[in-house]
Length: 222
Image (cartoon, rainbow, N blue to C red):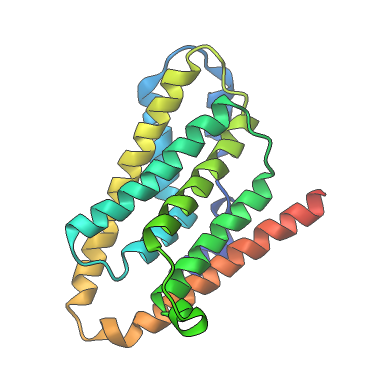
């Protein structure tokens, strides 16, 4: 988790739903249906999206059964896919900085949830399934705000967006697979419970960093 903090501090692009300049140029230049390139771009976005990975890490941190993991990941994917597609197709006018700040908030929320903060502070446990779906909607909307900035050609737009979404889900599965391997090994060691609290505090700190970066960008751009 400490390495994630370093990466976040060292790369501004990692703090938003950014697309690399090379990919941006490619998206702006092509027209027509290009399924495989858009699948690749979607997978690349998810695998390199630290905000997505942090949130997924938090979601599955205390999930042990595969059916529970599949349920929560599916809810996140449903929300993410829905707003990404609709946000681009209907050209929703939302501020990308504020949406990405909410995405940072999702990381903070999940870290606090894992720490049992809501039960101590509020006396009850918020519905974690609903929260995962709702924050999935914001994650997808954040990506939609970036895609709209790149003027994707109308010719082939819907097939290309669907292909991009397929790539996002492939990337999510790859990221999830890697996280589960690491978590599976870590949970079998004595250090897991010793460092579970610290890990979630670090994750929460990363979320606050994401929020601060995005709100600073919003204030400067306003």
